Amino acid sequence: MSGWPDLVTTALLGTDRRPVPTDLDLGWGAVRLSPAAPDAPSLVLSLAAAHWAAARAGAMLAHRPVTPEAPTERLPLAAPPAQDLLAGLLTKPDPGLVNAWLSCCATRGLGAAPELWPRLAILAARNSAYDRTLLVETLGPRGLWFLAQNPAWRRLLEPAAGGSKTSPPVDPAAALAYAEHGESPMLGCAMILACPDPLSTELVLAGVRLVATGALGAETRKVAVQLGYRVPLQGWSDLTAWTGRDLQPGRPVPAVMVRAVQLSLDLIERTVRSRIEIDDVFADPPQEETRP
View 1 (cartoon, rainbow, N blue to C red):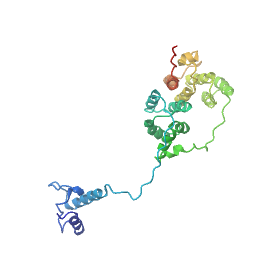
View 2 (cartoon, rainbow, N blue to C red):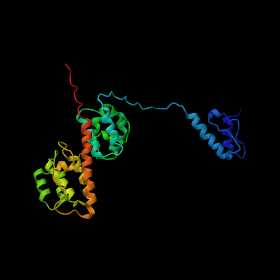
View 3 (cartoon, one colour):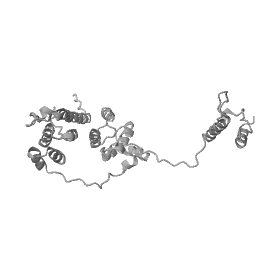
View 4 (cartoon, rainbow, N blue to C red):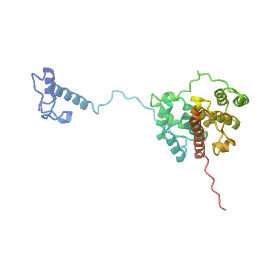
């Protein structure tokens, strides 16, 4: 058997002067020759590539960086129903609802399940609307180690940039007065949303009524979502019962905005119901009665 030395000689001399050897050891990455085999030069290149891969397979690396051992997880995980709810939220992720879940989880000192870490990391790395602080609090020491293993996720461990200046909060009384009597519905909504948490029921109701006027134009849906995140959950049943009054404004809604207004009001209600579902899944289980 002439083997690979003959193949090397063939490659050096050229296939016009020397035929390709046919007795190569298949264990070294050779391919079986057949009538449908490619032309001789292509065959030599294919054999050389296969042999190079076979020769390198299993070779020891010259240097292997030492990966720090993952720390022991000390953060208890949220209950399975809460984890299932988060998994559902992540299928069509809404930053506000995911943040609401993370907030409920972090407030109780609980953590997200490891199988959900990659999806959370991908979303937070792509969109700054996801609360990085809450994410870090719900991953625990082992989750933070997990993020550090991926260069694209390491920046999630850094403090959020503080360079952007935020406007001072608006006085709630001034926002309510403008929302009820001001000339610009959009400015009224902006003032309401700029008020500090928690928003009063009166403020949110004023914002909902501004949405119902249809005067917000292309911003109607955006304002509705933000109001849905700020609606007080205490005493909520549904939008109509919660407002306790007819939402129809004093002036007629522009015909082109009727559908958008209805969808936006529905969106407020769906957002609030999703927040209630998140809040309920983290509620303490009822205490079993002790029998004497």
